[in-house]
Length: 327
Image (cartoon, rainbow, N blue to C red):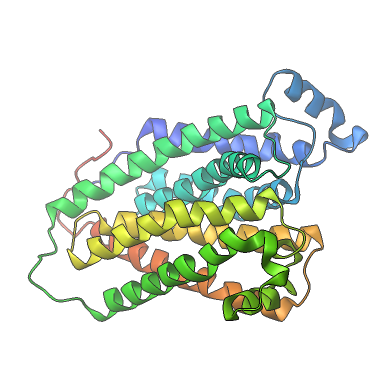
């Protein structure tokens, strides 16, 4: 009879803590501008250095809206999966941890990038303290899941002699597309955003067309756009190039790397669209969605492909005893 893997008590505790935060604190933080609903609680939390009263930007509001819906649902799913030893627990933990960690890192990055670009940007101390707390917890969850995944993948080597299959070919094609767009269109925008309305070259005209859908990319540029684009060019693209090499080399960590990167990039794209709608700066919704859907659907495919591969390795065959990786 197979025995389920014992859950890591520390990981379970961290998940319960953030579920409690999302249930108990975030709704009052969102309602912080309403004195009757959340003002007193927000002032108490702010005095303790744990929060501030209400969202400062539409990106903050978008992130908290996601935290209180999709992210919270994933936390609950993860808690059940950990307690019951379900095979998807490590993949789900890594995907969720990477996404939420990105949400904290990008806040800090946006503030720094905006300051360097001469744009209004700040990260109040309470927000920074909350971001660092969430970041630390989710980096631990990512580390815990990553170690478990890597141990299982190393135990069952894939074999470097086989060629690239169809699924890996699709993954590599998507990654090459993302890298090429980043180092052409997105890098062009990051260099020339100040003078974009006067540019007449093909890339400039294409970005002016996109500016009709998102005024924040032409004429109303803020630290949010500069921060997000610079992060993906400086951090995400080297990770995606590393992932391509890992897939081709059939490295044991490639599925973990693929799941982590694709999860946070998909989260980033969804966060961007939600923030745009909340800012009321959306022009042509057709252009906005057509231009961004490849990053949502493509990274969903990459995350699902890696998640299924990882989950398959944690399905315990009848008559086998699972080894506790968390012990």
